[in-house]
Image (tube, rainbow, N blue to C red):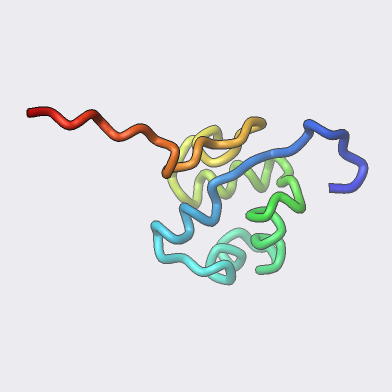
Length: 87
């Protein structure tokens, strides 16, 4: 992410979506026409996608781009509050 200012981070849910869909990094990379290491760099936040690549990833998972990418960290699933027990 060289040349970027602090706060320019782009957070994503690519790894989570790959796991949910049973897709390997290589399979996703092949579908997108990028090197499989690029997918790893994206997942780890070491590289921000171009708008074109972000849109192609959203198309691949058939989701709105803002569901996959954000300028703010996504809440962790384990941080979600459990409903209070009733009874």
